[in-house]
Image (cartoon, rainbow, N blue to C red; front, side):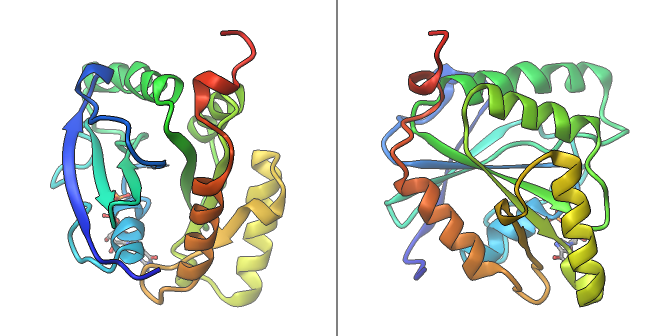
Length: 206
Ligand code: GDP
């Protein structure tokens, strides 16, 4: 993927403040500090397009980016950071659920997981929501450079099993070595081109 342009568009918390829904959209979600900004920056060859917050978890905004005028990337705030004030934590769920349930151009979610960590309750809740809204998910197992090749295989199987998903939907990735960058792009293209027209249109209860 040749990146001609990658621009921050705006931040929002509520649907009325989202930018106009013009392009197929891919959202990125993951635990605070998992490596979400590093993944986005690696994909678009920019050092600081997606920024790391000085105090992780405090900036609870959904950030929208325009990539090449053909694709929209959405950086969903990280979850699971222990020191986030309770009031902020309480707003995260409704904010994300509103986004996932209302954004018609959403084509899929890239869920970023630390390859060394077994998915917990937060991941299972999120995966449950995504399934209930019929949203396609690609699982990116990041920080793979921290494990040997044989350990990666073992962890990949364990994570897929813990999530109850097909191993083929998981991709080994490293922002440090760029392992898996092309595979993540291929998965994103496949999502963007899918006929899925977003959460609302595929739900059977609306
Ligand atoms: P975010 O909070 O999810 O956006 O996480 P960041 O992208 O800011 O990354 C959190 C920390 O993990 C930083 O210190 C990164 O340098 C480090 N990191 C992110 N991705 C990788 C990776 O693939 N390999 C290694 N070794 N470190 C990584």
